[in-house]
Length: 458
Ligand SMILES: *[C@@H]1O[C@H](CO)[C@@H](O)[C@H](O)[C@H]1NC(C)=O
Ligand SMILES: *[C@@H]1O[C@H](CO)[C@@H](O)[C@H](O)[C@H]1NC(C)=O
Ligand SMILES: *[C@@H]1O[C@H](CO)[C@@H](O)[C@H](O)[C@H]1NC(C)=O
Ligand SMILES: *[C@@H]1O[C@H](CO)[C@@H](O)[C@H](O)[C@H]1NC(C)=O
Ligand SMILES: [Zn+2]
Ligand SMILES: [Zn+2]
Image (tube, rainbow, N blue to C red; front, side, top):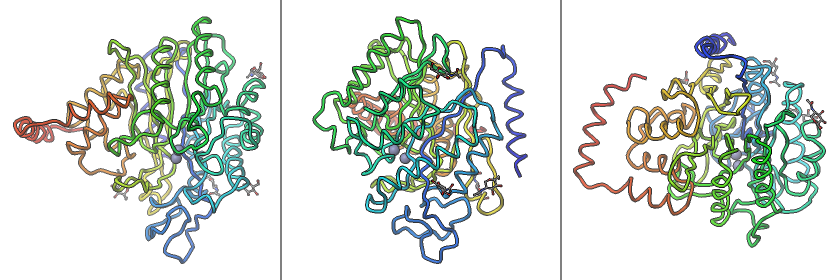
C-alpha cells in the first residue's frame, strides 16, 4: 500500500538529480490540520462529527469525510506519509489552525490548548530532530479569531508547548504578540520571520482600532531592515494571508489598512524576502507581489489544508478539498525556491480501498518553468490566465483534485485576479478588466477554448 507513492517519489528525484546537489535542500510545509476529536466513524447519528454542523455524512470513512474536520487517523496518516516521503527535511513550516470548526461554546481555553498540544506532540515524535517553524492560526485561540495584541495565557502556554522549537529570544516576542524571528537553522545569512497575522483579521475585535497591533509591523520592518544590513535572506511565515480568497469574489480577510501596510512591508524589503508561506484557505494557490514599476518581486505560497472540511462560507459551492501536504526544494545558500511538490490523499479512495498518499504534481513539471522564483511564478500565473489547459489544471490542483468541474469565465476572473492583485483597489480593477467582455471576445474565447480543450493532454 505504501509503495505506490514511494515509487512516484523515486521518479521525482531521478528527474531532479541533474543540477548540483550540494546547494539543494528540502522542507515541508503543512497547514490547517483542524483535528476534530469528536469524529467517530462508528457513530449511528446522521453526522459522525461535530464540525459538520448539521450536514449529514453518509460517506464518512476511517480517514474522514469532506464535511468534517480531520479524525486522528488522518493526522496520523499525514505525519506518517511525510516521514515516509522525506524523513529528514532541513526543517518544517507549520502554519496553524489546529482545532475543529465548531461554535466557541463547544471549545474553551483548555480544549484548544490540549489540541495544540496533541498536534505538537505527534509532529515532535515523528520528526524528533527536525526544527519546526510554527505560526498560530485564527482557530488556535479561544474564543476563535480573538488574538490579543498583548501578553496572555494562550500565547504563554503555546510558547511553552513549542519550547524545543523556539530560541529564548523568540519566546519573548511570542509571548507578547505571537511572532518571532530567528536565524534559519542558526545559519549566518539566513532568517525566518514568523508573523501573527491573526492580528490583522477583520473578525478580530481586539485589534479594530489599533494602528499597529502588538507593534508587529514596526518590529518586522526593523527585523527586515537589519536583515538587509547583514546580507541575510528571509522566509516569511504566517497563517491568514492578505489579499483575496480565490473561491469567492471580493472576499478578503485583512482589514483594509493592514492589507496596505503588509504590501508596503513586502515591497520595501523584497530584496531580502525569498518566499512567503501561508495557509488558512485550505486550497492550493499563490499570490504575486510587484514593485511599483510592475515587476514581480515576491510570491506568497498558499499551501492546501490537511483537513478536507468543506467550507460553510456563503457563496462557495462544494468547497472541500483532499488532504494535501507540500515539500519545497530550495537553494540552501540563497533560499531561492527551486521547486514545489504537492502530495495528497484521495480521501474517497483511501476510505473505500486503502490508505494511500500520492504525488499530485511538481510545479516545474506541471507548469513548465525553471524554478519557483517570482519571475517564474509570474509566468505560471500568466499561463493560467491565458491558457485554458493551464487554468483547468491549476483549478483541479486548487482543491487538491477534489473539484474536477470546469473553471468557467467567472471562475477564471476570481482566481486570476486573486493571484495577481493582493491590493484591494487593484483587485477591483482587475475584476473589471478581466471580466469586462463584449460578445465578440466571448465567442472567440469559446471557440479557442473548444479547440484548446482538444489539446489539453496533461
Ligand atoms: C498510526 O499509523 C501507524 C502506521 O500506519 C499505525 O500502525 C497506527 O495504528 C496508527 N494509529 C492510529 C491511532 O491511527
Ligand atoms: C492527547 O493528549 C492527551 C494528554 O495531554 C492524551 O491523554 C491523549 O491520549 C492524546 N490524544 C491523542 C489522540 O494522541
Ligand atoms: C541554535 O542557537 C540557539 C541559540 O543560540 C541554541 O539554543 C540552539 O541550541 C542552536 N541550535 C543548533 C541546532 O545549533
Ligand atoms: C479518487 O478516488 C475515487 C474512488 O476510487 C475515484 O473515483 C476518483 O476518480 C479519484 N480521484 C482522483 C482525482 O483520482
Ligand atoms: Zn483553517
Ligand atoms: Zn484559518
